[in-house]
Length: 264
Image 1: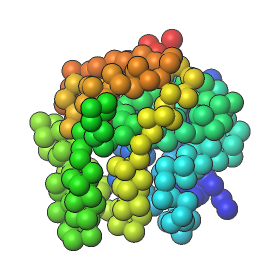
Image 2: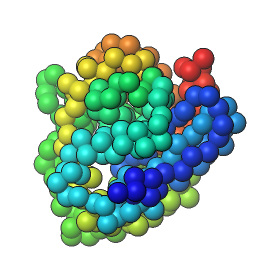
Image 3: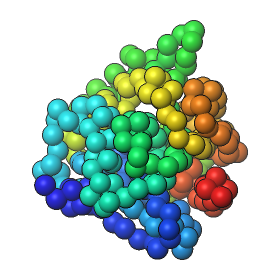
């Protein structure tokens, strides 16, 4: 198995510190294009696509492996091992924050720090202790919509994720990204993303962690960010005055500045 081909791995930049940029659900490495040029003059950048996303090798999709976030985390570890990476700074968006947490607890020798952009350890509500933002029935309905009307599902979800007040072209880009992902791969990833409960996983994370939370996010509220900050022992929470769940696309300059401050 050619891991670099499987995950369409691209390496740019020439710094001493390696940043591994991991995209969110329904996206691909292209979503980092605003942030990448700001970082690659100082850092080595590793980009990739999860299997079933972007330009990855879809023939490598294994239904059993990718029915949980563990399979995606294993991909991350294998990419790092294939490139002989160490002291990696993992920069994840949305569900990738949790995938990175699983990878870092599994192979702590590879990773040095974690940057989380709009993370959530669990999208489900478990009152009165935890409010992830969604009832199980609502998420099941959303997943079922993928079967009934995939285009309708994408056009409903994209503005919700990107933030209705952000640029129309960014909302349309996300919608097109959702639409271009084959439902055979998107649906298992959606289930693994939205029904996971990794609240316990994040408590095991020992690495210095920067949590970048959007002040107005339909998917991951500030309360979720506060919960994670409390749960992750060595974490810093930074709430950015912005709209939407994709800070790396809508506020790349701010995200770059926060990352550079965090890395010193």
